[in-house]
Amino acid sequence: MKPTCEVEEMKKKDGIDLNIDVSTIKNHEEYRELWQRLGKIEIKMVEKHEECRHNIGDTFLYENPYKRPNDVCEALLYVLDLYVWRVALGFPSWNSENRKVFKIHCPDPKGTVWEMRKIKE
Image 1 (cartoon, rainbow, N blue to C red):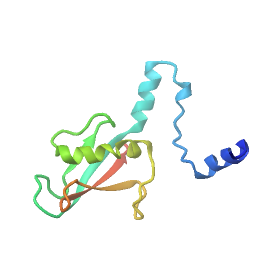
Image 2: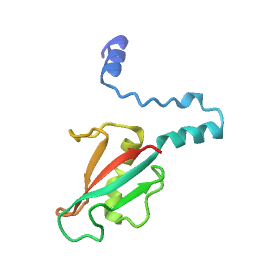
Image 3: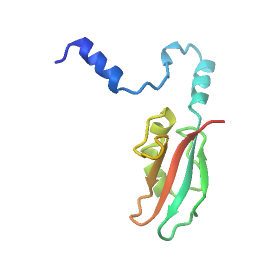
Image 4: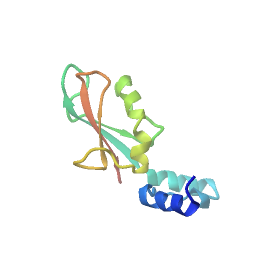
């Protein structure tokens, strides 16, 4: 096992600071304020490779990570659920062009590609 100071140094170097401190929340109002800072999440279709009821440019919003957008294909929503909290909390994506945008493929092998990003109002 590594010495404590070495482990702490690794956390500082390799970790992600989400700038969220829940230890200061004392009441529901403070909780709601933190919740509002999470922001909304936008999904937008950017590629379409075969038949789909959605079209390029279709855009939908998650009001929060728990409130899925209406009228979005259920199969796509299952895939997006894997990433919604990563986006909400500001984790970087694997997208080398823009680390704030996740490019997600629908479950159909020839289906659609969607961009998922946190938006600020």
